[in-house]
Length: 420
Image (cartoon, rainbow, N blue to C red; front, side, top):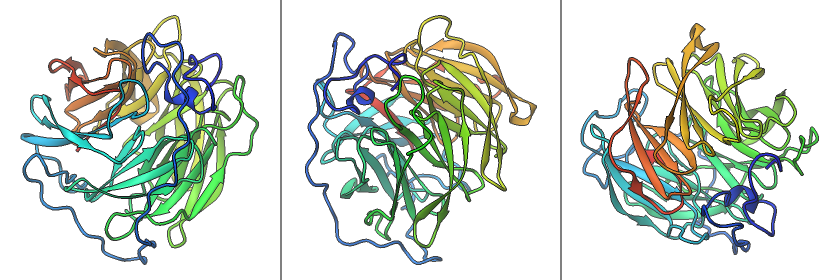
């Protein structure tokens, strides 16, 4: 990342700068992590033919169940629900794999439940739209993505991403393709999802060779790869080139075609983009210059228009904004600030076209790397990397006000929280 943004995360290979920033508050540098061995593999998987009906998740049941609600089936408002936690496994005091817990959908209380082992540095997680598989990045030099079957938490195998330091993944809404972003090598990859939820060999890999890196950057750093609400376009946010790339996905072959680029101001370091439910606006967290930006979006062309940067409300210093969230009703947005250890609350106005800064709320932990809303939008989870905790907030549906629900839940090197 920008030499003017985050402190060094470790010596040795370049991508460890991203991975271990602030992993231990007292550490001057983190140890270099060696490249992993050959990725684990599973039997040959090919993309399902167009129109194939994929299996559905089992009905939601006891805490062990990890089925996720579909858009047409809202999550229950009470009872124990699954919570998966992404960690780093190779840092001092790190986790053992993907954390498995449950949370009370009314009180937000989190209860530990174990770990899915056999996954190295699962720093970001995503669930299949039908809830029957979980996916994790293996954030290492030889990057990979891993599939886990639900609700049994069985590791189904891993596939190479073709790059290094993968830090983000998402599932295409159709459920047939996994999208991932390689931070260190500045590339995005596509993998087919088989009928069991297992992954096939990579069908495409695109490196962001241009434009030239922004100020303080040594190369491209893809930080997010996500599908726009229209379903027809994929957007890749690259911190190193200060660019958001728009692609079309060939849903038969799993290949990418670039259709447009949107540039931020030099040195902004865009990290994470989140859409308004209306689908015409998106909000961009700029890590390197500590700003937030409202972007216009044209669903017909996939073109993103980057607006003027605005304050995160964190005052002086560098707050390393990490991630935006938007409430399901489109009325409020939240931004995690790692250096400031806070959550910025914005009111969303003009049908999504404007963010109005309301306040910042202490996160109750150190270095909030990732935030996520429960499916019903009533709880917000913050994974705090340095303190190794997850804090939970209740979200007022009328005012967007955040209220801590209890004591933080301990999770080693917590960098991702995925409530289902």
